[in-house]
Amino acid sequence: MKIKYNYLSGLFFIFLAVSTGLANETGSNPVPGLGKELPLWSVIPFVGILLSIALFPLMAPHFWHKHFPKVSAGWALLFALPFLAVYKTHAVHEIFHIYLLDYIPFIILLWGLFTVSGGILVRGSLKGTPQMNLLMILIGTLIASWIGTTGAAMVMIRPLIRANDLRKYKVHTMVFFIFLVANIGGSLTPLGDPPLFLGFLHGVSFFWTLNLLPQMVTAALILLVIYFLMDSYYYRLEKSVFTQFQTGEALAIDGKINFLFLLGIIGGVLFSGLVHLPEFNLGGIPLAFQNLIRDAWIILMGILSMTFTRKETREGNGFNWFPIKEVAYLFAGIFMTIIPALAILKAGTDGAMAGLVNAVEKPFHYFWISGALSSFLDNAPTYLTFFNTALGKLGLSEEQVRLAFASGEITRQFPEFISYLTAISVGAVFMGANTYIGNAPNFMVKSIAEESGITMPSFFGYMFKFSVPILIPVFIILAFIFF
Image 1 (cartoon, rainbow, N blue to C red):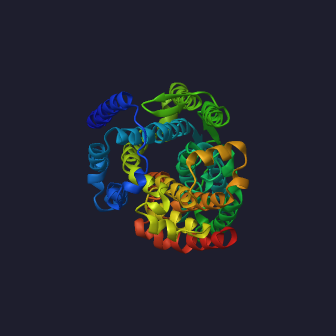
Image 2 (cartoon, rainbow, N blue to C red; image 1 turned 90 degrees about the vertical axis):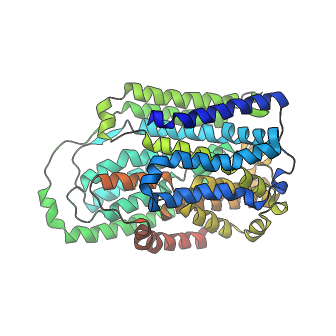
Image 3 (cartoon, one colour; image 1 turned 30 degrees about the vertical axis):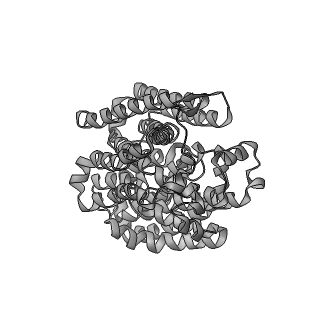
């Protein structure tokens, strides 16, 4: 694996070095009105990489598993080379900006949460009764906002599978786990789900997302009730199975020191949001010292986790580095190709997507369109796209919004933006559960379940048997209540 990816790493660092030299030489600045100049077809590589992520795992899984880094790099270069040729050092500035301020902090946080949570192993013999399953899914939902949907899924999925080992009907349990733990549960902090962390990087205050609590509680309660009724029905059909359960290993948690490292990550993110230190310039990009300290601290927490967690504990979790490598390579391409989409949307009605900006007018629209796209595209870039759509729609700059959040006056100064942001946040995070490809942990849960012998539904089976008949009515209720 390491040797296979070396050429991509080398390409990235060569490109980075050349870009640094150009940027430092010119002190490049953004192109005024870049979003007004770029044509709509410049977003084709962005659409291409997202469609590749959606379709290749279904249509050519073996090819995708082996070559997804090449596909990601191909789409990235398809945009980057002509962009650099036309806009030269201005293009370098835009590329540098999104990698230094968005991609690198984004990947560092995911890596930290993935590494630390992978060192926590829940052992013991649990009986998969409806009450126990409900409790485990509820716990996963509650912790997802604090250790990330990826972290919560890593911690809770294997104990849940072991508890239901003798159950005949357990696919619905895995699906509701995806609904709640891998998606909806991560809606309360920037740690919970990647879209919200991108919002945090773009100025949304850490604790603002707690305002999504009413939507999160409403959706979670409805889904938990539906799950409990469904699981109770199946439990009655197979109750005799439970006489086979033996009292075995007592419940215990290995790798408890990793909870300390998780608290360290939370503290690092909070530090970067609450402390304001001087900035310095790197190639025309302003970097804040508190953000660099945060990223270094998260890396340290991950290293300490790897150092102090026993190898057997990670093996018990089936821990390996492939999921985070996949995310890192795919998002390297996504963040490159999203540049024109973001610039055009920031231009608002003066950009090539004026029709979309004009059509999306109310929170109701933002909720459904950001949610619908998050179902089939990754929800992180979808969130960032419509975050910028809202800014362009209202003629606001990111700096205006950042200062308003910092002063605590955001709701008073820009109430319309807050209504849009709430709808975008809920749509992107919640509707990532509609398909396997809506959020990174969804596929991870599916893979772990299948490795354990559970026959999970196909891509469309998941939609037509579960998400469409169960989630969509819940989202309709949320839309009428809140948007």
